[in-house]
Length: 151
Image (cartoon, rainbow, N blue to C red):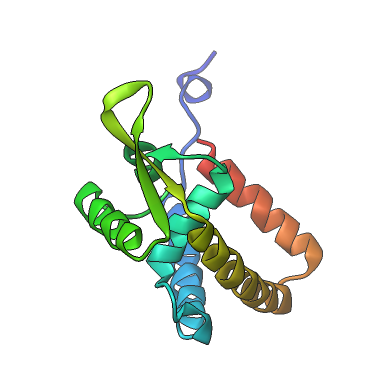
């Protein structure tokens, strides 16, 4: 066996970076469209992201577990949780498995806001993605993003 066949395949650095830049540009463009919409009166996009993360899980979560699903530092996440607790959208409780940890959950008011804003946001996503991509392209995008996220 030659040395060439024993080595890992060469990565195309330019192609990989062009794909990454396209992904980030698409994300930034779509987020610009979404953040400009009127649905964000009760909560910001970042606050909604937290409410959505909790709703998707369907149960109370430890802050460290929430942090892995949102793009915020631990101090920023803690401040946001404090604000949403103060506004009645989140509740804190002691973690029964670890007395030092805190679990966070949606209140009925937080669930209501998440559903209303989420419904409007889902329509916006469907409009923007559905107008730009065919159903087959949407399935392929979903497959590729899941592949990247699963690494």
